[in-house]
Image (cartoon, rainbow, N blue to C red; front, side, top):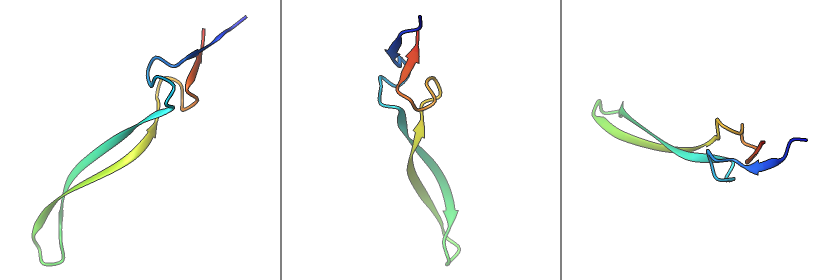
Length: 53
């Protein structure tokens, strides 16, 4: 029978916070660096926080 174990990829946190960096042009035509953070589900466990062993 399969046993549940804490995901080794995220440590049970269900995902990770990722940061995206880009350069965007403002209304005056000047380029400004932009940083956005977002939450992404773990690719190992699919966001469940556990894996089957």
